[in-house]
Structures are given as C-alpha cells and as structure tokens.
Length: 247
Image (cartoon, rainbow, N blue to C red; front, top):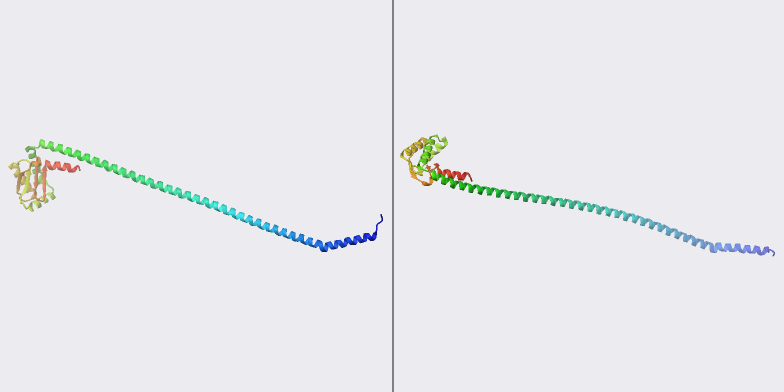
C-alpha cells in the first residue's frame, strides 16, 4: 500500500479545518457553557456557604437564647425558692409568735385562776376564822374584859399623837350635839365614866361632855363618836379590821 501524500495533506487540512470549526463554533460555546455552569456552581456554593454561615449564626443565636432562657429559668427558680423559704420562715415565725402569745394568755389565765382560787380560799378561811374568832370572843366577852378595855383606853388617851389630839379637839369643838357619844357592850361604872371623861378632856384640851349608851353588837369595849372623829376599842371593830386586812 502506497502513501498518497496528496490525500494525506488533504486529510491534515480537513482535520485542521475541523479543529478550527470546532474551536470557533463548538468549543467556545461549550467552554462558555462550562464556565457559566462553573460560575453557577460557585454561586450556589457561595450561597450554600452563606446559608450555612447564616444557619450557624442562627444556631449560635438559638444556643445563646437557650442558655439565656436556661439561666433565666434557673434564676427564676432560685428566686422562687428564696421567696418560698422567706415565706415559710415568716409563717413559722408568725406561728411561733402566736403560740407564744397563746402560751402567755394561758399562763396569765392560769395565774389569774390560781390567784382567784387563793383569794377565795383566803376569804373563806378569813370568814371562817372571823366566825370562829367572833364565837370565841363572844364566849369570853364579859364586863370584866370590857372594863380592861376601858382602862386601856383611859391610859392611852393622854398619850395620843399631837395630830390625833388636834383632831379630837376640833371634832369636840364642832360637835353639833355638844356631847361625845360613848357606846359600850356592858354598862360602864360611874368611876370609869368619870375617868374616861377626864382622859378625853385632857386629850382634847377642853371640857368634854359624854353621853353613854349600850350597844351589845360591840361584844366588849367602847366606841367613842365625837362627830367628825370616831375612836374605837372594842372587839367588833377589831374583828372587822381583821376581816378587812385579809382582803
């Protein structure tokens, strides 16, 4: 087989023409299409990267929000626990104070009841003692005992304190009845009447007129009524003083 150089050259020329045609009419559009596609891919990648970055930023924001929300919940829970603890402490304190007040009230009530019981017991005891003393003194009361009480009054009148002596003088001076009323449980002898009048005159510093009468309720002793001044040395008044002193 012989090589036909003319044919070979024509083939080469045809190939070169084909290459030129492909380069001008096919390669450039394909290259432009590939470049456009590459640019689209690059833009898509860039958009995807931007979207990824945006998504990452959004995720970071959401994570920050979640952490902030968790922190707020923790702070709210801690605040609520503090409020509950404070309220519990306040209520426990109020309950303790109320219990203390109730205890004090109960203690005060018990103390009042105890005091009242003691008072009633003392009053009953004093009343019983008064009745017993009254019966005892009534049993021992006699003209002789009264005479001793009258002698005691006669002996003590001159030794009255100065203020009592002035009160007696004033009472005698302003006595509308012009007489000192002397009551006794038993009749008083003339001797003791005179001695009592002399003792009153000496104590008052002026003449004293005495009017005598009987009062069995005195049990034994005297009751001297000078108007504004009342002197007593009798068992009734002593019993009364005994009963009042115990109240």
